[in-house]
Image (cartoon, rainbow, N blue to C red; front, side, top):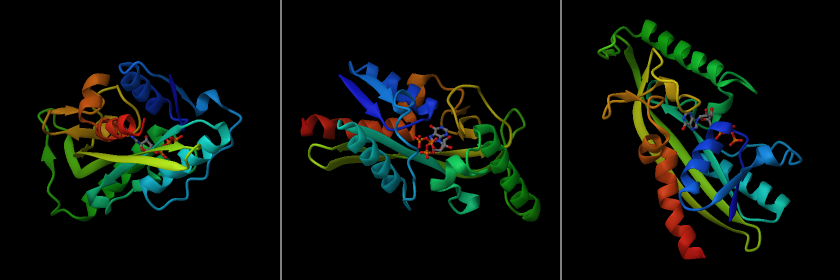
Length: 212
Ligand code: ITT
């Protein structure tokens, strides 16, 4: 059985493929369906955007489709970049551009507000702000027009230096104090166990079983 994921993000594709293969399911993504035009993500919330991606793709292909809308909410930036995480440094921005912009914004704030506490890690890197990753999943079935939905979050800190080379997106700057490791230092299994995406999937899968 193949599950179509309405994403063009290769990092997400890898994580879903890894998680779902253990359940005996194969995955396909929008990278396999280049004929589907770019989807306009104009929702105000992660969940709205996940619904838009799942419905547009599900209606186009005529099969159930899973979509993931996710991003980073940074406390010192009042929750930014939030639903704009993918285009924080502009439309079509690369992960490295977004990470550079994030550090620039946080360093500006720290330069202005000397009172803002900065904690140091043993390697000398600084913790710039609390942050959380959020993931909203929507599974849409064009045969019924119905959605199954779930959300997950994980809390951590943004560091001024990257840690690790795994994962994707903002992972190199996301520090997990409980594990004393960066998100990009985790294996796929470890990330799945604690991440926003892993948590959302854990909640969605039982709903899926019930619905079948
Ligand atoms: P699709 O819409 O095609 O799925 P996208 O990358 O545009 O791909 P989003 O709109 O959901 O997806 O944007 C997600 C942003 O949040 C993007 O910048 C990611 O790098 C970041 N992000 C999401 N999950 C992440 C994770 O597990 N680790 C690091 N960054 C993550």
